[in-house]
Amino acid sequence: MRKGALEYCVLALLTERPRYGFELVELLGQVDGMLTTEGTIYPLLSRLRRDRLVETEWQESSGGPPRKYYRLTPDGKRGLATFRDEWATFRSAVDRILKTGGAS
Amino acid sequence: VTAPHATQIIDGYLARLEAELTGVSPTRRRELVDDVRAHIAEARTGLTSESDADLLNILDRLGEPADLASEHRPQVAAPAPAAWRPGVLEVAALALTPLFWPVGIILLWASPAWNLREKLIGTLIPPGGFFGAASLGLANARVVASATTQGFAFGVLGTALFAIWLLSPILTGLYLAYRLQQRQRLTA
Image (cartoon, rainbow over all chains, first blue to last red; front, top):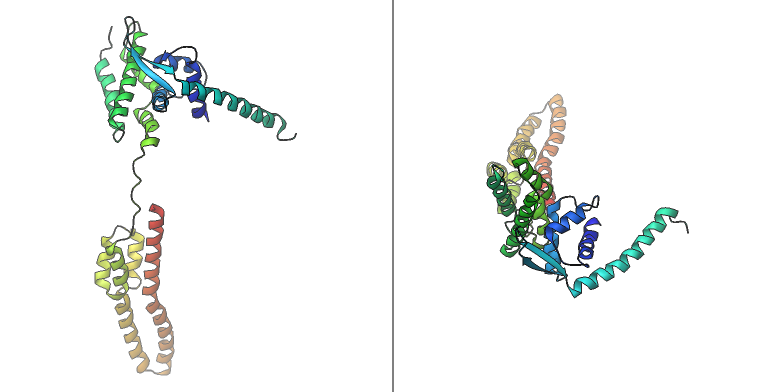
């Protein structure tokens, strides 16, 4: 479940602006339990790119190594919007069950 | 300041990653290695003066190359090993062990399909297969033929034992065939 959600967290982090891989790792690392190992984000990003949810571009950085930036595609935006709706429904359903133990 | 063993440490890690990615398409392999290389380079810019330990910590946080590579595998799963099937050797061993004991036993021991316990059972129950059992029976029949009353009683007991003995190659054969089938199902 965490892996499935992680994908959309990455997409959500890209809504504001394109970000590079290390930046995503740092942002996700601030949330406990989101990234077990930093490296696993790269296969995930590669998959998002192959699914055309993000596109990438290498850019020079000032004084540092070149960075690969990830940008949300229209497909990625749509996918994220769908997930937001589904997640809201799912979360409230789970919350209801956790609170009441199934008694309505 | 560069760590004393920076090249060895980083190149070693990337080489292990490459090795773990055998079987992954070259494009994807290159992409992942480039991404990881860029990550390491970026992480190093955050260090004012780096030590070997700093680099090792960066790599630790990245995770084991095998774990990174396994994320790639589900899509490029290696073809499952073909289900193991008993070959001519196993069939011949099964047919010949009861009937033609010496040859059957050699084939039985040559096949990797049975374990030591099964091979021992196949060899020793009964020793000599049908012929071994039959010759024992023949010796018994002679005792019965030259019977005194006491000898006759032994003879009846002997005949009963002989019947079981004669059945045993069949039972052994069935047992070996059953184990063979189980093993085949396990590897299917």
